[in-house]
Length: 155
Image 1 (cartoon, one colour):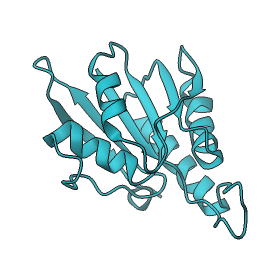
Image 2 (tube, one colour; image 1 turned 135 degrees about the horizontal axis):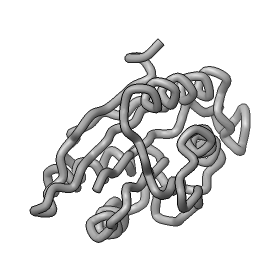
Image 3 (cartoon, rainbow, N blue to C red; image 1 turned 135 degrees about the vertical axis):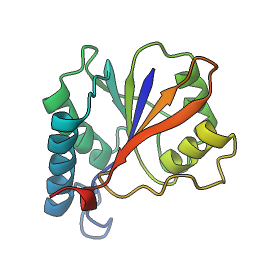
Image 4 (cartoon, rainbow, N blue to C red; image 1 turned 90 degrees about the vertical axis):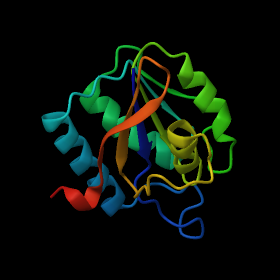
């Protein structure tokens, strides 16, 4: 099983935009990562799940337009910045299909650390707005990093 963890693109400040829509740069960064990943990686999530916050939904929409996941795109709870990463770590431990989660820091950073080393406070992956990391669940239940792409890596 593959798990794709995506940090939403750069968003406007709360003062500038209370809904925190993506900036033009944020949208462009996400599009570049999606275009690169779609061409060079085999990404086939059955579903794209996001937090429901505008910036995560907009990021998920760009991925969904390109990947067209069989089970679509949906907002679910416990993907917000300060949510407990153990909730989703448990959910994905039993998942059979590949999934993409689009969320926020520090949640996805903490979840990645929890899956990889059992401790959400050990920073294993430093996410960047619009970046993606692919994890795979091994037969023994352990997780491993397959690859990652940051907007600064693709032009």
